[in-house]
Image (tube, rainbow, N blue to C red; front, side, top):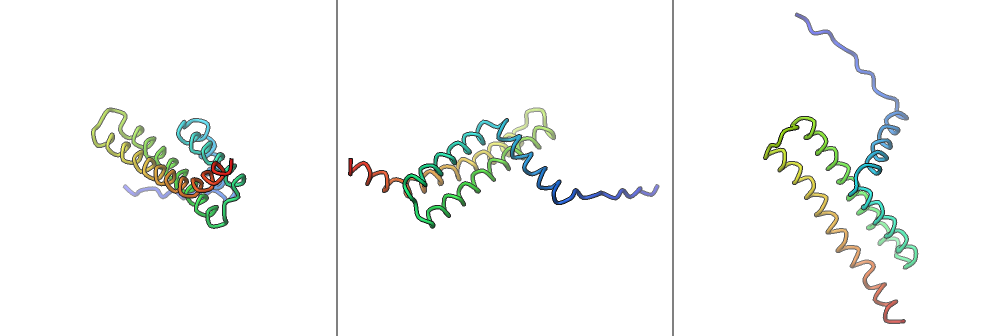
Length: 130
């Protein structure tokens, strides 16, 4: 007859951050592509220090790190939700999963192009001076 109202308790701010970091940690351990993105990020950071990139170039790299990692996490969330809701093969589910993976690929490719624009001239200068 009447729906019983359940009061949802919100987790504390500390718990919310804990859950978010746990999601990142679990994904790094279990998702190959996210692990690759983190390894590339570490390489870019190392080369950034070695090649002494500018503050603006650091800001661009950091923004790109955030975009790629965020999209990879969202892609995993979308794929997992679809797998739960639609365990059987479905063309629309496949399209949704492929599209979210495509979004990651686009941002990753743009990041590579920007990386070449930032690091290419510096590497060429070092190569010319050898």
